Image (tube, rainbow, N blue to C red):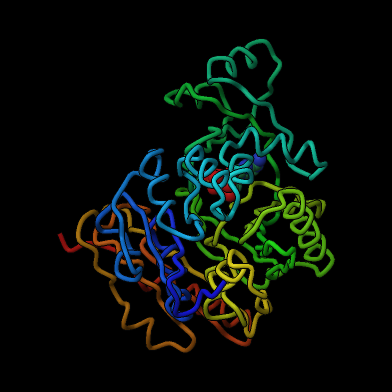
Length: 385
Ligand code: ADP
């Protein structure tokens, strides 16, 4: 099929920042795109060829949108799965496949998948709701502490809570959940794997993630991870294995824990471009977005190696500020070498809302880390009202 400067249409479910960054590459290749998103102010709106406003969880809306395009992908996992299944049954190419998405959308099912395929992961128990979890604690069948995770609709750590005492469960929703053993980890790592329908497969280098202690959002992503080469090799091999077991198409971001004994445990996966791969826009030969596009269109995959060390700093809304966004000191960080801000285009800031990110590239990773810290302490996402 001819994708370039043709009538071919790529459909993207979700119009957020991941979609917007994917659209840089569809524009580069002159590939037509249709985007569906519930918000009229979606970041994608300015860069797609045609924008449709609609509910991503509604069967009819997603199905009708799918009927307009030649290949369908998504930038968010919370989409109507039944519509994707039906579209795929009717012959539409949906990548990643709804079969993969089904295994991932529910954290309980995802964990069972790892167990079934002997992929190392933290021990866990599944519960139909919070009440039955509490019964298990009272019957001494579940020991504290553990990590509570709701199985569906959690994102960026908001469906996750460390439970040290029973009162920590107060105010949690009575929904399906898992209780996971606390992992004493040295590092949180991620590997992005890309795979096309012909089975060509490549991994990006292992990255290291540093989290904000309160917001549970990634603060720095560091590429390459400053870890032992053997551990990195192990992480890459596990990510490849996970990808092969899912038999996915497109990108699969595999998040992992490096334990104190240098074991690697898979935490969770995301079947799409991922926050941990944003550095690749500036630092890699081929960005994760370009490779996602190449993969879902069954084109040859691009080189995933880095040209330079890259560090990404998330720009989230400062606490105490809500309203029209202002990026304080953005000119200042722009005056430093190797610093590139990405502004997602959300008009309103809220505490911890992901508003953008900044990439820092440098030949020397320690230098990059120093500049990243300076960037983080200089730019502020605030509002002027
Ligand atoms: P989300 O899907 O919201 O990103 P995660 O499962 O990735 O949720 O958990 C968010 C964060 O919580 C992780 O990045 C990690 O810092 C911490 N966490 C999750 N599971 C565990 C665990 N079993 N042990 C210790 N910390 C954990």
